[in-house]
Length: 119
Image (cartoon, rainbow, N blue to C red; front, side):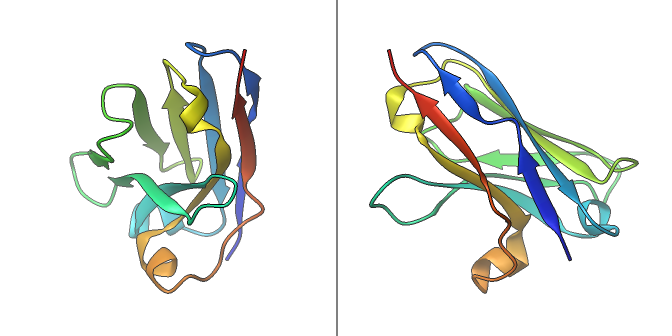
């Protein structure tokens, strides 16, 4: 099982980035997928989740990103995305994706992609 995150970078406050997470196999369609982030000196936290295993796409978000971040997915490409708008300095972190189950077990993490928000 492999997860490869990409799309990170440095942006000014108020800017936008779109992160991608390419998964191996059929992870995206078979699992609840989550985006997570870990800021320096802090524990990894859940940003939001997406479920693509039914007819309707279902998402949930942490209160800190609700209204600014949007998770979407492409089952055919086995990829999930994190569109981040209105970025704030406190969004600075390494961002990871994982299946919700593996995250609970704290296993199968990829290398992540770094996001830095500063002026």
